[in-house]
Length: 211
Image (cartoon, rainbow, N blue to C red; front, side, top):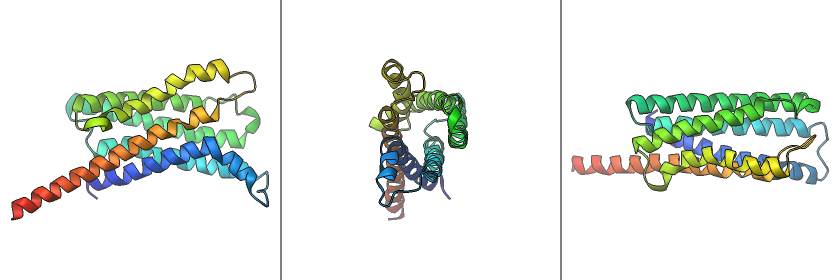
């Protein structure tokens, strides 16, 4: 499998992850309750846990796709990008661990540190990847900003969460959290479309050379 094909698949995975992430936080719980006949209460946490884990796995396409596109360039800049990708993947692994913990031990959901720790690692990892992508200048136009948009959204929404929603026995606002998925979706589309355009350009150049 070529790097461009890997990047296209990774972009699709990241798009899927972004959509699933937003759906999980914004609509899933209400949708499960709306089923007629209703889903058994004991089955709802299992469904939500699976969807959360699937979302995290798909979001890995963001960092993997950027590396497959060689968006981080070469040399020290590439090393920065690879470090960012590794940190991002660790953050997603922490997210998955947190999901398993939350639904395995619901009484301790607000005491676990896996999901907030995962968010921190995701933010840091995408910051490093975003800086590397900007320095390398391999992504064109608006696409170059998408890794940093993913990075910036979480810390920018956190003060609003802290002021209005976080408190004793209260979790973060799901709509604000779910909106993060939109930026992951944009990143996935940026990766997919960049890989597609590069493949088309190479095909046209090879055609001109052959003729």
